[in-house]
Amino acid sequence: MAGSSGLGGGARGGQGPGTGPGAALRAPRAPLLLAALLLGAYSLCALPGRCPPAARAPAPAPAPAEPPRAARSPGAPGLQVARGPGRRRFPQALIVGVKKGGTRALLEFLRLHPDVRALGSEPHFFDSNLMPRTLDGQITMEKTPSYFVTREAPGRIHGMSPDTKLIVVVRNPVTRAISDYAQTLSKTPGLPSFRALAFRHGLGAVDTAWSAVRIGLYAQHLEHWLRYFPLSRFLFVSGERLVSQPAAELGRVQDFLGLRRVVTDKHFYFNATKGFPCLRKAQGSRRPRCLGGSKGRPHPRVPEAVVRRLRDFYRPFNRKFYQMTGQDFGWD
Ligand code: A3P
Image (cartoon, rainbow, N blue to C red; front, top):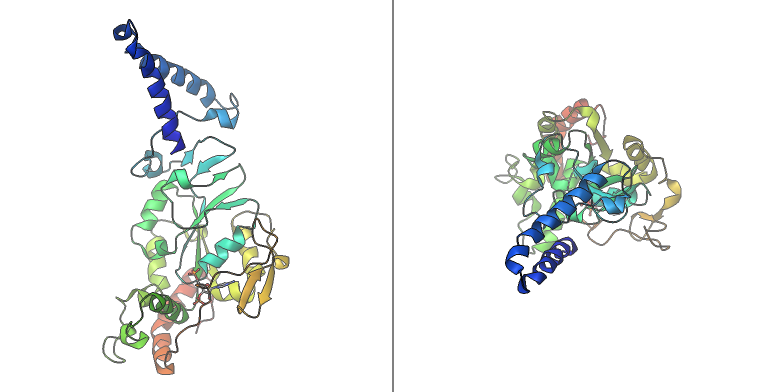
């Protein structure tokens, strides 16, 4: 890491005189002197407006093996001062779910916004060294779709920053489950059928222990999150509308994030071959871009009776979710 090698270089430089005459006397003073200089420079620069952002960097520290303390203490602002323009900071907004809801599409579309900085891949929540730098007024974002169904996630995120804005892309849980299965199948040929995995015996009880089914119990997951965050911290994005009306859904997201509505209709076109909206120009390029082959892949055929049974199973959970969020997603 550049930071640690910088510090290492300085320390090694201080050892140089240790080989000359009088080294025994000088050696213990060198680190003290260096520390005093760094402390002095840092105290001056820590005062607002005393140094340009680039000069305000504290002495680089070795990469932490675990989350930095600031990240773990409740209410910590989570700001990491670093060299270069802008600061590395923990995300002010997170796409916390759901897997196969359309999370990649949403993040890619949001990245078109000049005031959004997001990592392309996931997840580096606790690794401040990998967070992108943002200027004041820019929003750092990250997507980790598994958070929505991870018991520890809301507590941890709340502990880090209770003001985090949380975005959940939800999709008809039956289609979502099939999409999830299609993804696993693409990596695991010979997987048992969807029907065999979704039900315990034949068309018996729905197997909620199967993650493809469990993830779609949105009301239950949300109930847990609401112990930590008020509903006002959440935005629920319709995965279906993200496909049928991407600009409208992006408008809601930008409003929620307090951003200007920069990403609009003119950024999208419907690609008939892909069967999905694509970008007229991808970020940092002049060329149109669709999401990759793992997004929008064909689904295996699932018998109608299986789909019906699952739809019946999810209906009460969906209704509860509509009530909780005040939004009817129209899945039933
Ligand atoms: P399918 O592959 O089942 O169609 P995630 O990024 O959360 O894993 O979600 C993947 C899903 O995003 C895809 O599931 C697809 O339906 C949906 N999606 C939404 N907008 C899309 C777009 N513009 N291009 C491709 N897939 C999109």
